[in-house]
Image (cartoon, rainbow over all chains, first blue to last red; front, top):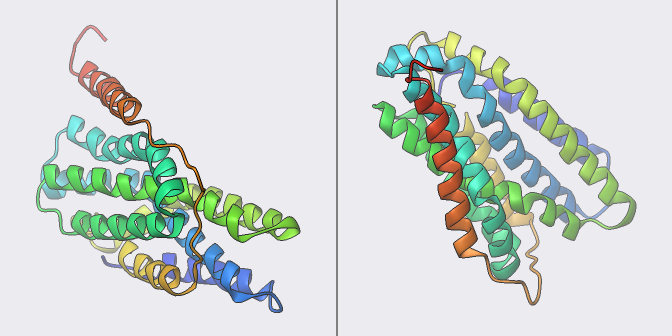
Length: 189
Length: 56
């Protein structure tokens, strides 16, 4: 929870560009794209961002090597495990509703990660984060496919794909920025 | 960092995202979900624990 500016400016810049590209079209679906991309960015960022922060976490919380592996894997594990189920639940109960649930769960668990006082609490928070992330990930493309038709769908999926790549690539960099900003403490992702 | 970004995304979703669903959607495969989750967790557990065994 220390240095927010790099991620936010990066995201909002991308969002502004997306909107600027479609001034005449209905706002609704492009806002859907922005929301989906914000969610996707966060959830993919969180796979890699923690890696650079691991030494700081180890110092801050006194974690063992296996503990650190679990901090990384707890997230990836629940992300993978809940993906399919989240998809079919969203078909039943509505994608917007599920996406919202995913966002709230993910954001809430992220805050818990930031306030984690023990290794176990961080691991459990990461696992909960993964559940939220899985819901967002599963629903994201369905939301886009539903909101966009024809040529716009290609644009939307293209932006989705670009954000996917950027988020994974930027993760370690942001992790470094966040941890070096506050030595020993700022391991929140 | 996820806090503010998440909050923005939540607001946009509430205000601007249209609801959609699939009529006649199949129920989730709960036994499959449980088995897959257990299997995946066991695999990861095994891989992490294998680190502690000297023979590896």
